[in-house]
Image 1: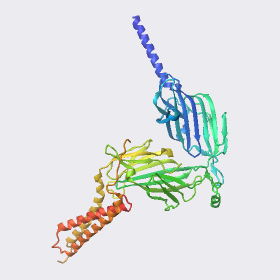
Image 2: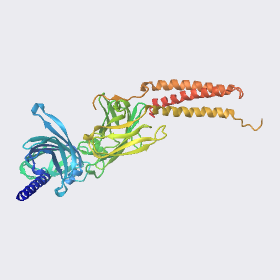
Image 3: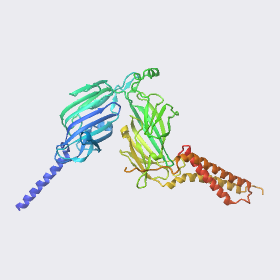
Image 4: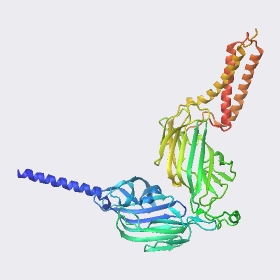
Amino acid sequence: MARSTAMKAAGLILALLIFTFFSLAASSSNNQIQILNAERRIDLSSHIVKVFLTLKVENVGTSPASEIFLAFPPSQADQLALVKAQAAIGKKKKKSYVHLDVNPTQLPDAPNGTKYFSISLLNPLSSGETATLEVLYILTHSLEPFPAEISQLESQLVYFRDSALMLSPYHIKQQTTFIKTPSTKVESFTRVEPTKFAGRELKYGPYEDRPPYSFSPVIVHLENNSPFAVVEELLREVEISHWGNLQITEHYKLVHAGARHKGVFSRVDYQSRASVKGASSFKHLLASLPPRVHSVYYRDEIGNISSSHLRTDYRKSELEIEPRYPLFGGWKATFVIGYGLPLEDFLFESPDGKRYLNFSFGCPLAQTVVNKLTIKVVLPEGSKDPSAAVPYPVEQRLETKYSYLDVVGRTVLVLEKKNVVPEHITPFQVYYTFKPIFMLAEPLMLASVYFLFFMACVAYLQIDISIRK
Amino acid sequence: MGSKAAAITSPVPVTWYPTLAIFMLAIGLIVSASFFIYEATSSRRNRSLAKELTTGAVASFFLGFGSLFMLLASGVYV
């Protein structure tokens, strides 16, 4: 009797211990990891903000950790275009980098709407071990022009808002933030001691022993005259023809997203000293196209725009375009760029018999942010089972397009993505099945039209429509 | 991706398109000329439907393929 109650008690205590262990493990994963050293380098040289984080993390808990969380304030999380992470393996000369998966997650007790991303480690970090992670994240639309309206003669000044202390769910032992500015002119910056500004670098830190979720907002008011080229909408249409050509048509709606231009535009002033009179404007755009491109055209609603240069190479082609007018703050330009590419560079056959198109996702214009990118891949008539393999989350849907010599229409696979930056330029694939015999449909359609004509002639000559015999 | 995947090209080399277009259209027009000559020179009783059909079929085959290659050679990749 006593033994059974003792056993029951032991069982109860064991269950209680297991329960507390699991609850502690689930809720206090934040207490497991500690960041020994965090170095953050923010690059503000262009209107796309690039932040490089080097984190040295240590597992101070008891159980192995397989993910590390990154925290972002909600306003910054909306402007986040890309988060990439890699782990450094080896030391000094034998250093190599391994790419790690980063996914957005949610944690239950997030203060003030903090958004999280979780980095999945390759090998779980056991207790007492340290690891070095490098994270790159890119923010768009984060530089707010202030003053919001400038005249032609003024330089463009912008606000950059961030925190001197890195927002993190972990305790950070030592952290430093370096901000690289495009010029030596910085109007003002918030001081969070120790702060130092020398040349083009603003240094916040080092700060020791900060608790999790510590945040110290700073505002840096700096001069940034780099071209604020934003494409509001980009529609890229890729038409595949099995007769040997890939036809690309790109429709751009370009806008200068910096400080709005107020007052007059003096062409005389602009052409005399453009570096002073119109410092924040831009007039050239560079598009990187694949090699062996042909039949390139650049036109808008009015007609052809002749101010463009195409330089081809065996590795790449560069199209330098100049819109009809230089773009000042708030000014827009709409144009179409089209070109053809040889089919054998992009269409391949996979081992399971399906055909796939290997093309690059993103915008060919350098240093531009695309607010909404739509890629339409028009597959030839008779293609079935289209599917896409894209390295980023995109919205997909199917449409039909009627083009040359079409009877049933061509299947179009539409991919949409918002907030695209040049770092998104990577290849993606579109798979489909196609029986080569369907290619004969087009010439046979043309031949049957001619045959009908000849038979109509025969019928006309055989019919006797004379009234009088 | 593994080993190099096989690139898919057009069934007819692209550089042949203009030559093929000219030759096929020329042959097609010659055969259709012979068709119309036959129609014009024979009377209704002497005509043979079989000859008309074969000449028409051969002419439309060459004209059809010829106009396809002409479209491809001028840059309309159908």
